[in-house]
Length: 112
Image 1 (spheres, rainbow, N blue to C red):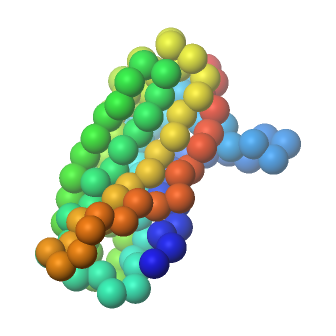
Image 2 (cartoon, helix red, strand yellow; image 1 turned 180 degrees about the vertical axis):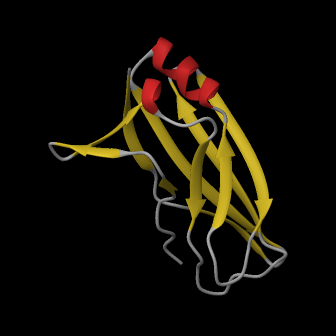
């Protein structure tokens, strides 16, 4: 199954590129994973933020028929911005009866 990228609430489209203005964002930032086909409350969703400063991970069980929300501390984006402008957000789903599946990445740029 092809999993769509997660969403990040405060991203802005600037000339076709996604940008997160770190100084203007709320704390914490809100990411979400939309409902997906065959979701079950036992599915574990692992959200991963990758920046030039490192990796931040959070895990939650899937919600049925609604987005699963994640709160990402603003500090994680600030640390990433200090190290470089590149960021990627993705998630994987671990089910009891199948190998983990990983979403397409949401790639964006960090700016002040």
